[in-house]
Image 1 (cartoon, helix red, strand yellow):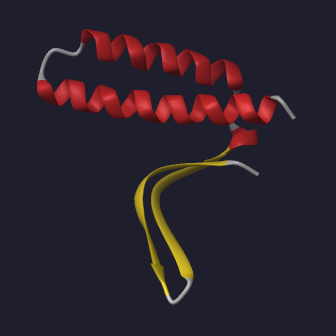
Image 2 (cartoon, rainbow, N blue to C red):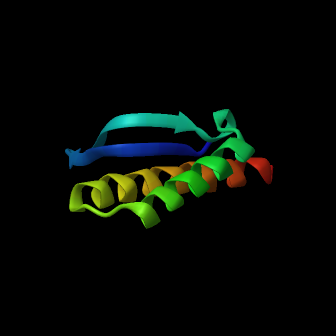
Length: 78
């Protein structure tokens, strides 16, 4: 089952993987049409961003939207 992980970090110690994330979503819980719409909105916001802060925030939104869209597309193929 594919998962979308947003922000965080991973560490490996004594052959044990620990992953701490800020947000998580299961692919089957993501609506494909909504993910497409969110991606379009995030891309438009990035194109309109003028300040450095707005560009950084918009870039993060595009990355999150892209990951969710890819996961939703993957889940829809099953």
